[in-house]
Length: 376
Image 1 (cartoon, helix red, strand yellow):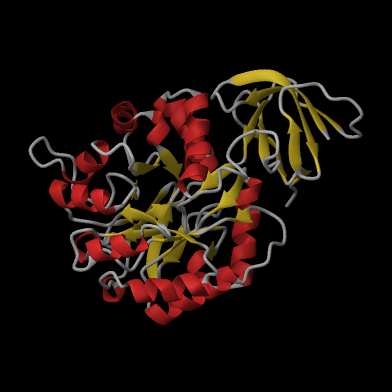
Image 2 (tube, rainbow, N blue to C red):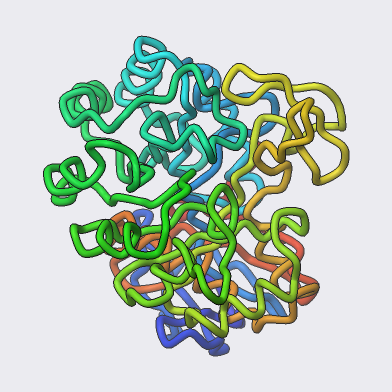
């Protein structure tokens, strides 16, 4: 297959007009004009970008990662593919230990049946702080337990890519020391001060979950987790850009403060995403959804009701960041973070042909996975 006349997003983070060719589900050319291809797609006036990679979201279209069923994962991978998210690393919640084990087993045995590729699991709980639990269930919070994590990772067939921890809680530093070579350690749902967060990063933590949310604010005398992450170039922050969690001014300031090469866009979406307003659940707790806002009944924000493609559009159209920057932060950066950039995250020869065609208004014209157009 040949895609002609597209504005191709390159690994140099710019758009170049040209053709791309796909054979056997892989890119074989990205800027040339190969001949002899049977199928031709005319992409005149369109952007050709890598399929998006969401490394932190819980569910969509009525399904949730913690449902623990193949049917739920089928719904998730199908919906995410329809909105241009071709690689997914859904997040678990702080649920009972035995239930979490079953969720991991379900994901570990999941067989691909079309749609987005399940490339990992983000283990958001239960190793968090009760003081910053957000929408997580307090009764299931526990201290870091490496043996339990190992049990979960075995059940998941090694699919866990990120583990979230509160570094101030007992056992956190020891856990980082033992697990850092196996999984990305993320600072999350934490009341940590600056010094403790820096210590955790020095031990091997290298990620920050939904920066600003479920952590102390950045203060000029107490910079906290945000300041510690800023001062550690090897630590990469996520940002929920749904128009609810973070003000556009703060998004602009954060990109200026950290640099785009460190930023990762996520959706943090829950099961109401793609559905109408109403009553839903997240981690077993009731959630009310009105527009983009999802809250527990006490008013606590409970994830997002926005998919990653919409978050990327928001960053461009409302926040005012360049499209080139937004694409990098929704494709290359998250792919690198969980170790799959050799396969996806850019338009490059030899990589999987997962890509999206966007019109000039950033509407989806077509989604391709393994070189084949996805249709629901």
